[in-house]
Length: 192
Ligand SMILES: [Mg+2]
Image (cartoon, rainbow, N blue to C red; front, side):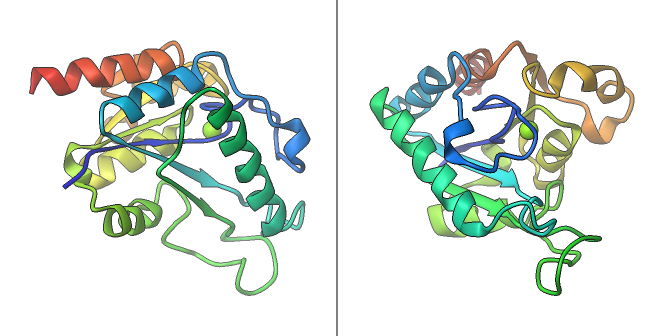
């Protein structure tokens, strides 16, 4: 069984710019490529999980999402890092045409994307980690028995107050950015 670091995309790996409608607006945050390279070096699966309800809302197509992901992989490759998987949820419970408008099992904090990744990449979720800038990322970690790390990039800084209140979304660790998050994860794995 593999261990994974599941990473949110917008505000965690790349700059949060609202809905990303073109690959040209993709800009990787400082330390993100280093963080992913560290994950790669330690034989841990590096997996992106991202809610892209902009598809359901009609802001952009799934083809655009795929193009953004190709660009992301290209930028990471230039820095010697790679992703083992990218999963996205195009749905929204209230917006969009049938098919896209649904109460799916993949929109975070629902566990669907992690469940599929776990099967496809043979991942032990209970020893894995979720890193993200929103309460939904941390709540997802709790739902699957993983550890959640909140990053203070993207929306992370605004969320910090509310995250301490509910145990459902209390992070195991709060990190300045994704690189600090991964450094903590590597230490945490050694402690076990
Ligand atoms: Mg985010």
